[in-house]
Length: 143
Length: 104
Image 1: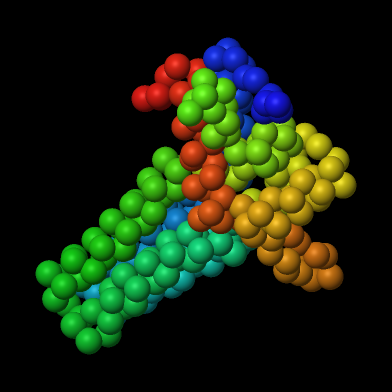
Image 2: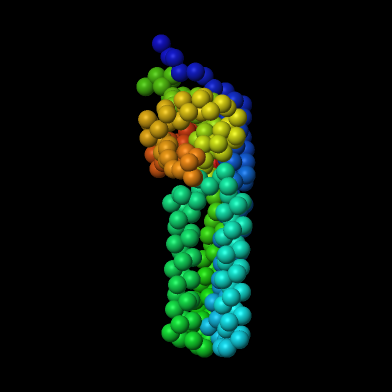
């Protein structure tokens, strides 16, 4: 005897709509702090490392401290805004985004230290930070 | 092959036909990983009902349950596994077939 419950086309359509709605709302409700953070971190560190690579003296000091101040402010804002919804911060996907950002940031800092004043390497590495941050944010927003 | 065996409903995942389990996996589909409370709020069930259904999904290998602590507070995270995602995609594809919209 067939015990599989029957399901009509209308019921199937309703289930598909429900799945889509639920999936979108769960994602949208929890992801905006992550998307905002990675985007802002990328813009701040990209501009900061570029400025640091091309300036000396007081200009360098200003770029250095401004970058650090913005980074710490962003981290504090991020920690506060994900309170109670921090599960994604332990996920492989988020770790991948942060690791990608860190690799490009480390490259940009290397240029600041070992190739100070050279425009092309500074533009490439700082640009890469921006690209990685934009790609990560876009990927998460479209997930 | 009989007419009964040919109907796409026989390919629906039995585990995902439960409404709560269906909703849990739907909530995790885009997000990938969510906290227990986030899933509870999205699915709108009690902690115990969610816990029971998550255990079934975990036993089937569809969902991975992670435990951590924030200070002294325990935190549980739910992640849709590769196996769970594959089962979910197949389930949705079958539903689309039944709905008559295979390319949706």
